[in-house]
Length: 226
Length: 180
Image (cartoon, rainbow over all chains, first blue to last red; front, side, top):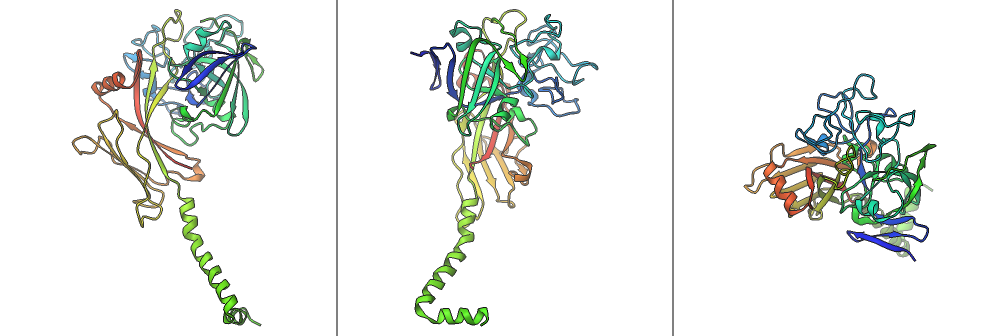
């Protein structure tokens, strides 16, 4: 017998007998974590930046209220950290995911490192609300996920890499959207600020495996306690 | 026997004349029918983008959620009589004090015009806006987005009336899509 963990705007979140977590929802887009790690555009940059960005800067906030970029103090009233000359996108801001990646030596990277975060542009990942993170015994952040578009039966292996608002269900990275045929803002100036599938459409099926580290494109992701 | 004389012979017989007329009428009606089938409707949606301050995050953790949005839909588009491929959306949404007039094909085929009027009936700053070939297939463009400026005072009102605790409005956007 599956157990209903909760319901967000008409979508039941169920814990199945095998401890996987399932729900069906739409798919909003999350460009966070994209810092040009794999030669794709960064998520955010100041107006002076000469290049494409995945999202409109307003979605990261504004001076005094930086909600979506890493700041020097770690608080929203700090100064955004700008990528340096040896970083992937010099001049762009550093955008974060909830899931933090270690360096090649296995040690934690500084918060200013663009490589500390999961790249929305190239890594299929899922965003989940606190209800799921706090509602199951297994570790959710970094766990395996399988995302399926029931309209075309396209499916992709993904990682849970970001935390979403408490009242929203169904959000994915740009790479995840592309992999399953969800409009990923093709042709738009800021792809992450466009595209997606309406939250009420209930055509995207999500299956998460708390406690099971995700392996995506040969990379094993760390399980991260909240 | 030439094609013309064959046609004349066919039309001369009452039974084939009727079939011929039906066929000609059918062919003649095809372009109009195809035009209707090919012309999609328009959908206008207001997206209220926000981020939520997450509770119980460990020091060094990401303090705010991924971006998300709430939506409000404008009324369905209408096709004005004898307007050909013109599609028009007119209306308001609950949480903005503006009137929207969105017109596809009125100025020129494929041209999208967006007018936003304040409560006083004046154009909102930066509007009207016009986009030629708004949904050109070659460019894979499926939607057009327009930023809607809101004052801090109005943003606070939207946060109070539409968003939940700890959620902060980051921008308001009009998204226009074809319904096919």
